[in-house]
Length: 389
Image (cartoon, rainbow, N blue to C red):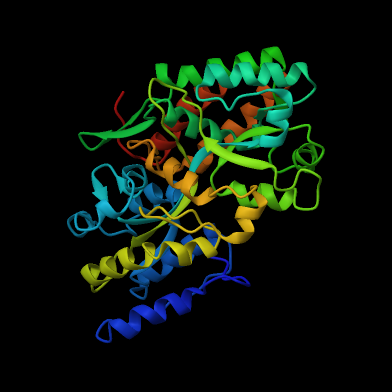
């Protein structure tokens, strides 16, 4: 957590717990390095018997940490607290049927759009992928883009959209991994994006290139799918531009038969092996991650249920909209059965490479997902993990 200016500091939150629980003091330690470096430190500390009870970890990293023997099974303790969080967020803290902690923040996919531009062009906010394709077509006819294809975000946004179509890429059956990226649900996402690319009705740009931000500021890009946590980033990009305050947030258009969202980023707090008091650790874990307004000041979209106050700065950036209320709806709609495999980072790298090829027309969108299928199987085999099929 950034612990930046104007944010409720983690130590201040923890101090409230300690004041109310004098027999179970908690000490918070901030790690300022990269997530991968923290995972190495955690592994070394756990093996040395000096690891902490709790650690913040990214959802996609959890399966690898679990199979490396670093996380504790707290399924029994989690039963007391799981109703405090969305089902989709809880599923991301689960490997097979084993719960390893509680979710902290989530990144459900939503649709961001320039409300002023939509009104000017006579566009309606899409609620289905078919409507989204039609809106993208109408916007393109008027020299604008209501959609962006982002090759560098392929493993995040495309996986999240597949989850929203009710795909379940990875599951565990009889203590073996099952890989099912090549599914009819995923094919719906593939078909949608291939159609958009073929019709040239989406902006093709890497999300983290300067060209993406320029397209926002210049009002060339007036709509995009993104993770909930991107709202603050989009607003900051446009804060000094003419369209500052004119954007809004809506639910992700339905890619399947049911209106759902899918995960893109976020993290949870896991209980590490060697923790002497997992019961107490989970009690604090639940308390800390339900301090939703404090966590919101840190720039998070809390995974816990409950009303979150939209910070005034964010409300102003989004034209007075109660952004957190809309993001909370998306959190409730998170696909309940989507998770990752150990080594998903390798899969993501290959998806990015194939995504760049699809963007340039050298490959099809379906090839991105086939690459994910093949690479996932190989990653599991290389790790010596059992796999079905």
